[in-house]
Image 1 (cartoon, rainbow, N blue to C red):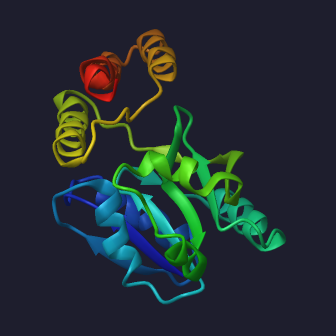
Image 2: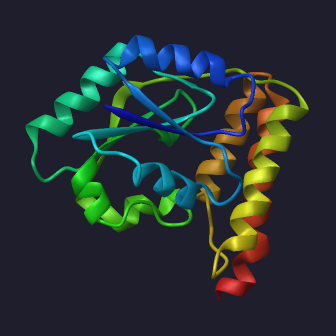
Length: 204
């Protein structure tokens, strides 16, 4: 299986790679280290894939065998499904996602903003509530800096201003982070809420 990781070569990548090797049999890891829009970067990795399946992993996610087996079972039992997305305890993420390579390529891969892939694929993409990965617990300004980087890149390169996150879901996450004494994660999520209201006039 090909495994595509878009990364800025952060320290967390070492732990992600270790989890990939432990969770996926004989992975062929493809690192995409360029800067740019996450959807376009993932598509660059996708174009290098030739195996039956491709797994997309964020460089701060820890995969596990239970997640892998659940995703593969769902993909193999339903021909209409071409992508399966897992989740972390905090949220859904395309950073723990397995696709049928040929079919996903034919569908055009990721939009520029990767969260739009759910609208694009509709019922052909499935979210598994019980396929849970761990999120590497980065702390401090690193968390805020990471979100700010992706926020500015997505906003500046999108042809039309888009809403990256559901604002209601973002508010729920902010409360969750504050309750669990993770103020930097709350501040990071707040950036996406601010972006939503900032770009709204451009959308309307």
